[in-house]
Every structure is written in structure tokens, then in C-alpha cells.
Length: 226
Image 1 (cartoon, rainbow, N blue to C red):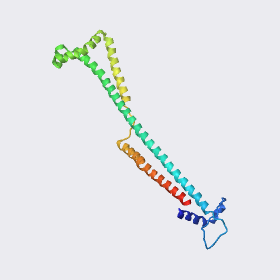
Image 2 (cartoon, rainbow, N blue to C red):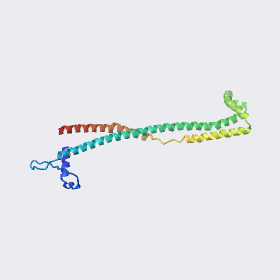
Image 3 (cartoon, rainbow, N blue to C red):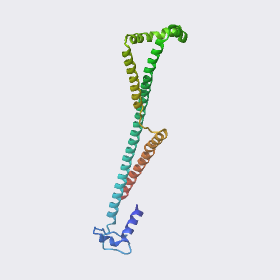
Image 4 (cartoon, rainbow, N blue to C red):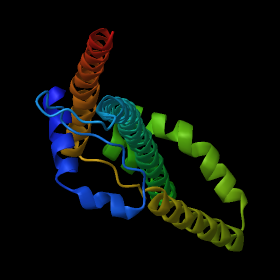
């Protein structure tokens, strides 16, 4: 502290022209016991003012550091949380798209199976699927075949066209549902997590130590003044 104040006084004494700038320059000089002076030396008052300014600057800097750490931690946490939510939404979109795609292909395949199997004879079905397979298939297809048989030729044509259109719409919806939003890569998430841990574990710890050192120095300086 004394060395810093001595350097400030020496630099000010080397520049007597500073008083031409129009501000009140206090009278400060390095006391010399061999050369008494009638001017009142205001060096102690200047030292206290400079020290007060330095302490206030240090305290403001430490407080700003803490706020910056909180802002950085909050920004990283929000980014990671948003990325997790985006990843979840993308997964849901993929599942929805896969379901709609499967449903879109199932409709024409079921219609084709209904037409083909409906036109095949019982003996051919038994040879292709077996007796048990034919019975199991008839349980599901018999109601649809009966409904299909009750329709006229024109109605059957319209019904097939409607099912094909439904299948096309499902595939279009599945295509648009598959659109996902970009997410962070594994490397980017690791880097953000490392930065978050560094800010919380290293920077905040250093700030706490600096603040404690600042308080100890302030208390010791007050004791010296007393």
C-alpha cells in the first residue's frame, strides 16, 4: 500500500502542469525532515480517497463477477434444458411419423389382401396358410368381406379410392410430422457441462477466496489506521 501511494505521489509531483486542467489539486508532497515546509500536506487525505476508490472498485468488480457467473450458469442450464426438451419432442415426432407411415401402408396392403384373398378358393387358402391360418384369417376378414359384398360395383370403386386417398393423406402427414428441430451434439453438451462445472466449482470458489482476502485486507488496513 505504501509503495503504491508513494508511486502515485511521485507521479503527481512530476506533473505540476496538471493543475492547469481546471480541477482542485490538493497539496501533496513527500515530507523531508531536513526541509520543513509551511504548506499543509494533504497526502493522507488523498491516500484515503484513493484507497476508498480502490476498495469500492474491487468490491464492485467482485460483485459483477458473481452476477456474471450466475448469468452464465443460468444461460448454460437453460440451453441444456431446452435441448433436452427438443430431443424429447423430436423423439415423439419420430414415433408419431413411424406410426402414421405404418398406418398409411397398412391401409392399401389390407385392401390388397382383402381383394386377393377374397378371390382365392378355400382349397388354395388351406394350401397357402394351413387350416388354422385360414380360420384365423377368416375371423378378421369375414366381416369386411361381407360389408364389401353388400356394396355395388360403383360403391366398391369409391370405397377403394377413398381408402387409397386416406393412405396418401396419412403418408403426407407422416412426412411433415417427421420434421425435427436441430439439437446439440454430444460434444457440445459435454463442453457446456464442463463450462458450467468450471464456473460453479472454480470461478465461484476463486471469487469467494478473493472476497475473503479483500475483507481481511480491509480489516487490517483499518487496524493500521487506528
